[in-house]
Image 1 (cartoon, one colour):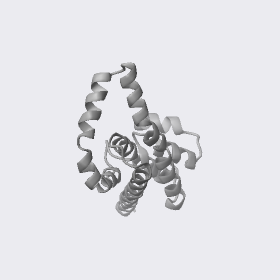
Image 2 (cartoon, one colour):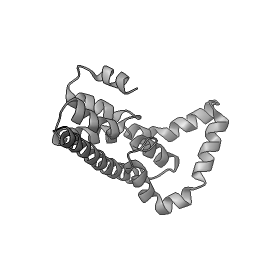
Image 3 (cartoon, helix red, strand yellow):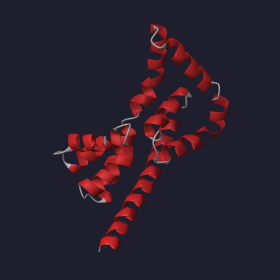
Length: 166
C-alpha cells in the first residue's frame, strides 16, 4: 500500500504530496509528515502547516454531511437495519459523551495509530451530534498533538539512524 501511495504521488511537488497524504483517511498526518521528511527532505516548518491544514480541512464535509447521509440511507432503505442499529447504539451513549466528549475526541484524534485520527474523530463527533465548532476545535487540537508526536518520532528515528551510520 505504501508503494502504491508513493507511486501515485511521484512527480508532485513536496507540499502537494504532503497535503494529499495528510488528507487521506488511511494516512492523515501519520503519513504526510514522514513523507515530507523522508521522501521530500522538507523541513518541519514547510511540512506542518500543510499537513495540519489539509488534515483538518478535509474532515469539515464529514462533520457537516455524515448525519444527513446516514439519515438519507435509512430513508432510502440502503443498509437501513445496520445504519439504524449502529446510530441508535452510539447515540445511546450521548450523555457520557456530553460529559467527557471533548477530552475523549481530542485524545482519539491525537493518538497516531490506525483507526484513530481526524476522519474517525469527525465521524464520532457526527454520530454523537457534537456541536460543529466544538468538534472542529477538538479535532484540530488532536491533529496538532498527533503532528507533534509523529514529528518527534520521525526526527528521533532520523537522528538515531544518522548516529548509528555516521
